[in-house]
Every structure is written in structure tokens, then in C-alpha cells.
Image (tube, each protein chain N blue to C red):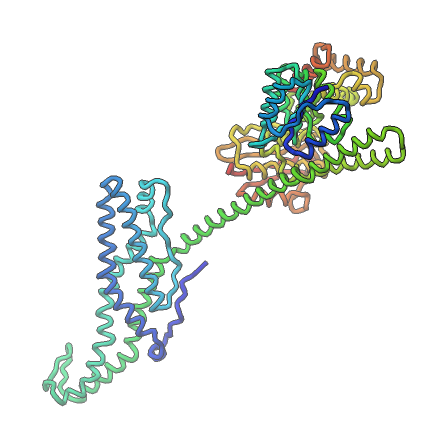
Length: 214
Length: 426
């Protein structure tokens, strides 16, 4: 896995570089601002890039805008955005109509090494990794009257994990159940929420997000 | 508030004689005449110039504004004179501050009530001078002459002298007049001068000084402004603390957690005892990160600065332990301070609801009404929220009143509770 890292804090950048190198990833470039990020992506064509939202010069959302450019110009390159806070509308902008190869996590989750690496791999392989906080916010802003009232608590856990972009295997591991059980839960959820059953993780994520946003 | 302090003026005439007051007051009253002749004329001329110059386009407007300042200077000089001779301290008045446009300056200058009050002073001073000069002559010049009457009566005065309706034709009569004049000089003259001086002092105080209500209004303006500055600086400080924590401690902790994570994977399964310790340390680091994140969000969440109320409050609502509906319609962002205070009210309200209300659900609604922001937080809990019973409402009220906001809570026993806050958009 070839990775480009864009993070202005030297401490975290070096930490992520070492972490990834130990995980047998090839860090082809580690940069500190959005312009260098776009240059590095052009030059190295990595599998995935890790992008901090706040970067010089203005420390607002340069990273996010660079991420959108990369998504548009090179859809095959995965983008994992790290942010001090997660904002559901940032997520919507990033995902657009295609949750493939996109991740959006709280910066602090980097400390949770296994989760971070797992999310990064998912994004690199064209999957999705969304922070649980994004999903919670979507639920709050959903204009439907309590969209999850019809689901059992277990089904709600599965729905969240699914919306975060996890595969059936990932959900099974997280909730400590068999994959068969996960599949059954998922088909129940789709039936209860009146969603057309979707194949593949992308479509599933998209279906759930669309449902929550509508 | 400053009041005009006049040194105590003796009331009894014989005490008046022993204080320098009499002479200073006399000098002041004489000065009135001089001032009327010189300054009064100047003020009159400048104002005439001011009004006549108005049509002369740009130059005239500038001239008008300058002319009105002359009145202020003259008033200031008069206040100084009152302080020197009567020890009368008058709160000063100042011309209105210059604005961006000359035309606006001119309009403000000509509709300035303080200016016209001072102008009125100079008009009335003319009357003061007309009364003051004869009074001084009557008090200080006439009596000495009459006191001397018996002495020169017998000498080189005419056999008879006419004094108003009285005819003085004997030494006895002249003596009586002399005594009466002496009594007048000793007892009436001081009172006469004192009375006039007091009237003069009243004029100065009421027409040249800052009026009580004007001074109060000004003070209120100053206080509102300084309170605004305090509130703003506190909010700015909170934002700075949040940034410093994020750039410092938070990043170090994340880095520490990463290092511990790497240590864990390097160690593998070779040393279960150490592995357990590292896992524990990693879990604690993650816990510290979460706690610090919550702390900085309480200070001033960066999402609020970057993305405004809607995003920040959605995030807060998402973390609440009960379902919260969020409906925020604020197309134009208010000031950072106001945003911060509204956010604080929301987070505190949700905390209160979680602690006390036993609510199944809550709703947050923010709309803009004219130039104010209205926030309504409702919950279906058990009600009975009372600011006086320390249910966390007092802190909210303090924070809202700091920006001239209104706060109301309706919370019957059994619920529902409705907290309504209105703040200016700032």
C-alpha cells in the first residue's frame, strides 16, 4: 500500500509515518500543506492519502478542499481525511455520490492504531470509513421522526457499523457475532426501513446515508 | 458620578466678610461683563458664520463644524473661570466625536443639544452682566460714598444735598444716612453679591456642565461598551485556550497513544505481562484524549468557529444520551461571542436535562427574529426547573444577561420545560 501523508503537525506526521512503515505500508511522501499534497499525489499516484483538514496557510479547511480535488481528478486514489471535529456536511461533500475510497475520521482516532489502520486499508481498497460521530449527527438531523424507532438495539448497532463503511466480516468481528447473523440483521434493517436491498459495501453505505439525510 | 462641588459659602454676612469669597465673586461678576463683550460676541459671530456658511458646499460644512467647536472652547474657558473664582467643579462636556462623513458631522454638530445649551448660557450671561455691573456699583461704590457723607457734609458740600426723595440738610441727617449706608455695606452688600454669584453658578452648572441624565446616559454607553469588551475578551481567551490545548497537549497525547500502539504490535505475544501493561497504558491514553476533547469542546469547540451554530449544535445533540431534534435556521452568522453564548446555553441545557429532567426526548430550535436570535430548548421531562433552586439555570442567566439577552424558563411540575433565550446578534 503506497501512502501520501499531509499533516502540518510534525509530531503527528512523523508518528503516522513510523506507524505505517511498521505496518508494511510504503509512505511515498509526507508533506505539511495542501499544495505539496496535490503535487505529491500527481507525482506518486499513491493508493491512498491521509489528509489533515486544517493546514497552512489559513488553517481552515484547505485539507478538505484538496481532498475534494483529489476525489474529482483521481477517483481511484483513496482519501482518508482527519479532522479535529467531524461535521456531517463535510462528510456529505466528501462522499458526494460515491462512498468508495473515502474516509473521514476524528484526528484523535489515530491513537487507536488498529482501528486507524483498518480504516485506512478499507479506504485504500475502495471502501469507506466514516467516524461514528458522523452517523450520530446524521441521525440527529434526520427529518424523519425517530428513524430508528422501528429497529431493535442490535439492529441499530449493525446499522451504525454498516454506515461507518464496515464489511460484514468487520461488523461480525466488532459485535462478536457470526457473519450469518450479520447478514440476517442487514436484510431485516433494509426491509424495516423500506430500503431497496443493496449489494456491496458502497451501495449499502450510500443507501443508509441517503436514508438518514432525507 | 461627578457633581459640581462648590466650596461652602458662608451664609452670614459677617462671616462672608472674613472669607475671600466676596472678592472672588465680585471679580467673577465683573468678568461676566468682559466675557459677554469678548467671548459672547465671538460665540455669536461664529454661530452666525456657521449657519451662513452651510450652503457653501464642502468648505462651508467643514467651517460649520469648526465653528461649533469654538462654542465648546468658550464653554470650557467659562468652566475654568468658575473653578478659579468660585472653586466650582463642573463635569466637562465634549464635542461629539467625528464620524466618517463631513455632512454627518455637520448634522450631528447642529443638532447637538449640549451645544445649544452652551449657546443659551452666553445669551443669559448677557442678562447676568446687565444685572451684575449695577449690583456691584450698588454694593461696593455707593455705600462708601454715603458713609463719608457726614464727614464732608459740613465741609465743602452744598448746604443741602438731594438724596433721592430725601433732602439732607443737617449733620444729623447726614449721620443717619452714613450709619444706614454702613449697615447696608456690612449686611446687605455681601448678600447681594452672594445672591448674584449663586445665580451665576446655577447658570454655569446647568448650561455648561454635563447634564445629569446626559452624563448617566453616557456612562451607561461606556459601561455597555466596556462590558461588551470584557465578554468578547473572555470568549477570545476561551478560543485561544482551546487552540493551545489542541496544538499542545492533545497532539502529544495522540502521539503517545500511537507510540503505545506501535509498542503493542512490536511486542506481539512474546511477553503477556508487559503487553497487558502497555494495553492498559494505551487505554488510559485514549481515555485522556477523550476527556481532553470533551474539555476543549466545553471551552469553545473549533467546529463552532469554523462552521457555525448548526454544525456545532448538531454535534452536541448527537452526543446527548437521549434523542434531540435540531432545527436551526440562521442564514447569516451572528458574532463569535453570541454564537459562543448560544452554544453554551444549549450544552448547559442538555446537561441539565440529562441530570434533572428524566426526559425521553428534547428539541432545540434557533431562529433569527429581526436583529435578535431566539433559542428555544424544550424537553418532555418532569419539569419543576427553578433558577433559584440551583438547577444550573443561574449560570445560564448570568451568561445571557452579559450580552443584554432575555432569558425565560417555563417549567410546571410534570413538564414540559421550555427554556427561551433571546440575544442580540452582535
